[in-house]
Amino acid sequence: MAETPGVPEPTLDEQIAAYQREFQDLDPQVEQIVSALSRLNRRMNVAYGRQTADLGISNAEWEVLKALVLSGAPYRMGPSDLAKRLGLTPAAMTHRIDRMHAQGLVTRERDETNRVRVIVELTAEGREKWLEAMRRATVFEEELLQDLSAGERNALGDVLTRLLRRVEHAQPDAGGRLSDLD
Image (tube, rainbow, N blue to C red; front, side):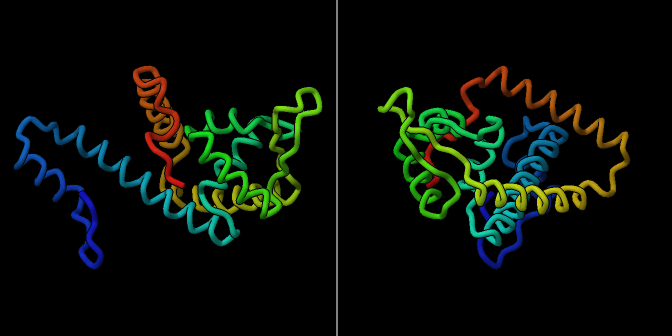
């Protein structure tokens, strides 16, 4: 259900009731879980986007920083590997790297062992942006989960991980995007 500016989004109960009215085979319990996860994901992405914007980077650039950090020291990857990891076309990845290079977040140099290959490397400034984004995200995430006990956090983590594994098994190629968002 798309939101119209100035018109509040229906509550989950209102959404489920509307869906049940239009599609009688709906399992309301399943729909509540899936809709809540979808709304939570959307709102978390908005919150993270605000945090990264305050740092002068976009969520898209944050994804590149994260991929480079996850690759391990010295935080280097080829553009095609980055594109595959993020589910982007090579052209979209090049555009993203160009922006980040101009901001001093990454370097882009020829591979000494293969002069045709380019290597993208995280700069000190890029790593600092990543660290600050992580600091802010940690505060947000702790606030998000503050009402859950340690046991509830463990149980939620286990359940969500099982759901994620099921989707990853059923849709192994769905790690990236269906289309470029840049």
